[in-house]
Length: 480
View 1 (tube, rainbow, N blue to C red):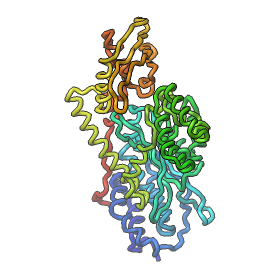
View 2: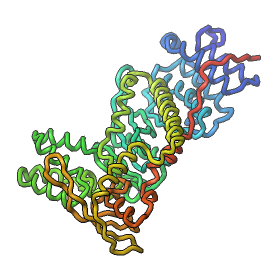
View 3: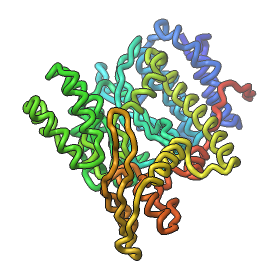
View 4: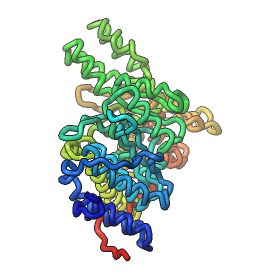
């Protein structure tokens, strides 16, 4: 049977593409029309169209990134059509995804999509292995977020198996801001290393980037690869995952809770006191935790790399948002991430505009923290030791506290020039503690320059300034 005489969707698609070679049809319109009108009907016809076509489907590399492939897209469409006539649905998914990828990249320049292929059972053929994508607005937005990402993986189920990898950042108001995604075969050393390399090379080349994750062996290896070793990158563990592993081994919730409190202490002296107390109860439990480098899980040893983000709850929460889509084909999953992020950006862009109109300088969560610290600062007593260097002694006032008769009476050293306080909260979170605010008030110094810029509403507005552009899904076109 002559393919051009066939009435199947695949043949109509091939004829449509072939005719376009001698027409002046707008390429964007052509691709959008094909994706909207012809491709959806192909899936039901694949099993009935398995005749052989003597065409080399892999003459050249089909990798598409943000560069415009120009006239080669015609060849790609023709080859895609032929492959639909002779391959399985899984390879069809790869070809179809490449077309949709092209339309997305054209509509949103700067978007990154990277593919990996593997050898198929049929000699000389290749098939889908994994795909990485990061939308242009997210890449631009992350430049104005804290240099911390949370990464996690979740299994896909249904017809198409695999694992979805997600990298999530946070804005100045602690709202999740997904940065990058990938669908891979499993959470292997190879797949995690590839995913983290894609992030480093295509999404975030900035140095001193902190990655919070579980202790998966694949991630451990990935974080030892080029571009991630200190000082370029820092690896921190999810405290929740570590506590869960500890509970599975020691079966002691009280010890687990005690360790959790120790891990969240911001002062080394208080951390040591809690660990000593745990050691008197169960020395093996203490040794289990201390066998892991302290900077990986203890906040007071973190040196401010993780900005107080102690778990992977960020990426887990976004995975939960995608829970209902994990049984969908990859193309549908990509679409869901696209429209979900667009919703985040649109809503938060409007929110930032309202806050700026109201004269709000800091994000909501930081406003609350500064107000709380300012209230405590009113009870502190300040002594100046070096005005030029900004060195102060701050003694905290006594106050009642649940479970205690009084709390306070401690003396802390504040150094404005080095941006440090002996309580370490300022260094760990990037927000002036009550001791710093007291010193600033005492000497009539503006505290605002001592707040990290990530927490400003004006900075958060820059996060959501980039816009997603709609993708045309149905157009009428006329061919000669």
